[in-house]
Image (cartoon, rainbow, N blue to C red; front, side, top):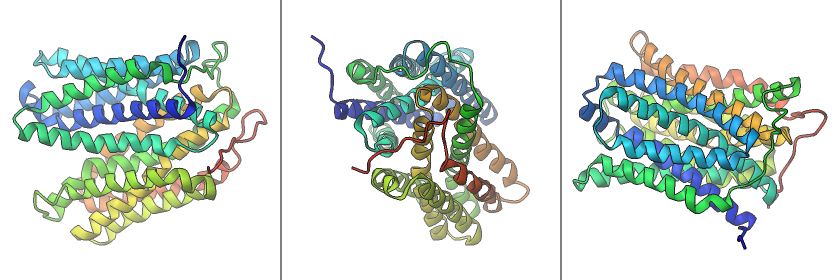
Length: 394
């Protein structure tokens, strides 16, 4: 007889999936210097590869949509985690450049599939529990990403090498898949005959929540990609100080996600979204207004506090606004993630030479403020006359 986990047990295993995703992604990012040296890659080729991985991840989100429609998001999640685990394992070996790029693109497809299917699973388990848990699920991702950076540092310092850390992250993804399979939500929220048929109501939900996701990842990518460079090159921070901006950002993201499930149900999504957008804008504006190391670190932390709440809030709103279609909606909303990430990384980089990174941080400020009008329609998200679902603050 199969033992079915409780709703709380399901949530913990889905949280482990978020942790596997965060551990793997951070391992890849922190291993880039090792990959460059081992494969003999220059910066231009690395940038091109990262762009291809991003495109592959967007394709993975569409794969999750189709897989969830046919079999359920648990199959999309399991398949994506296995793809991530296998690809991470293969990156630990020296291969011809073409093969290495193919492996990273396979990782990108798996990453995009996991991105979308985890949010699908999170919405399902949140509905089963009857209370908000999305922030804590995303907190598992953030905590694991921080752990991966520390793990990479420890393995490299101990002489084991970055490849061991990447391989460990890949093995963890496979273990989580096998051990957590029974706990994943079996429900299928997109009927096969409806998959791909997006009505006006669905498009409205995707546009509103997708705009929030786009802007959140615009800010996230700007800070993640350029905070250390800005501190080191523009403010002349020491090598040991330059990473503190990103560290402060990630800590603030984690803290905000740990408290978000208690705050958002009490304030309501619209007020929480407004506060998050304003916090992000204020944080980046502080970086622009006060050219000092301390102000920049504080500004990045304030930005992280806003991003930490905004991302799970948008995915949760998307899933609950379209009952019976949540998998489809989340897969499409997830595509905005990659658009925002590309703009945050690329546009700030292009502006760094003509105007400097300090002024370039106005880009997320403007984007965040322009997103504020989206909050009004967020209050009235309905599809086919079904009101937005709510969750208890328990």
